[in-house]
Image (cartoon, rainbow, N blue to C red; front, top):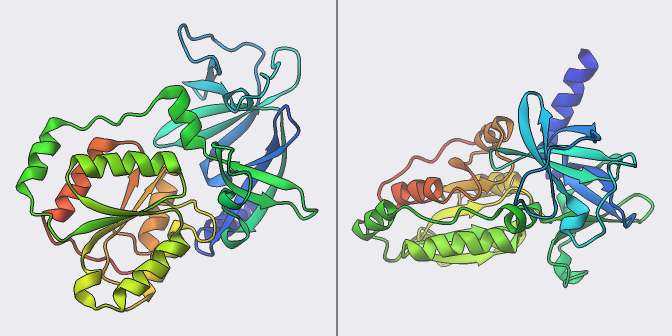
Length: 318
């Protein structure tokens, strides 16, 4: 029990030290891929029988029973354009993950190892393999092997589609709120996520700036702060992802709270890591709010409430 508690505490502290523990695994191409362990519920051996779902996407193998709940299983490699995994005749595994308040199963060939890396060791793919649209970051093993971190949000968007439709009520409510001279700073390394957020803000007639990394965003905010309080206060909301190369959203939030010129900014963490433990971590570092990705009405509701009022800035506790 003591070892289990120590392990849980150690993993929890990773969220506050700009580090990420990943499960490294392989697909049929024998390339190494990685996924944040904070998104993983369990890794199971693939059952030989998966219940087919009529008219589903070709990469969706069907559903399995997981703890009494039906979970859709996606062949992750096939979604990337690789040959399908022959799960009926070979040993394979399913990573059960929590994304955006939903449970999904990703079919893989073999889990390889657990590996901890600082986010500043994880590189943006813009400098490597920029043509690979599903790639969101690159890391390396101790021996120098490349680990590809995938844009799972884009994978799910292509397979399952995204809910991007706003209720007309929010559009009408937006017309009543004074938004002139205020803007939202969007920080997310996923091109898919940025596009969805930008489209929502356009629908609400809200001005925004968009950046791919927290490092870039923090430097930008510091430059704006040099122009005085009036300029930095135009950023009504900093809407940030959590998982980003260079600096994660938890560290970004802490730096904002620790910087006097920025400390009063309203920070909303917007993430696919939507479980309660990550919500608690967001509160500990001083985030004002925590919203699961790809829930447009919920996001619009929170944004409009902030533009229409004067929210309190929480105290950072860690």
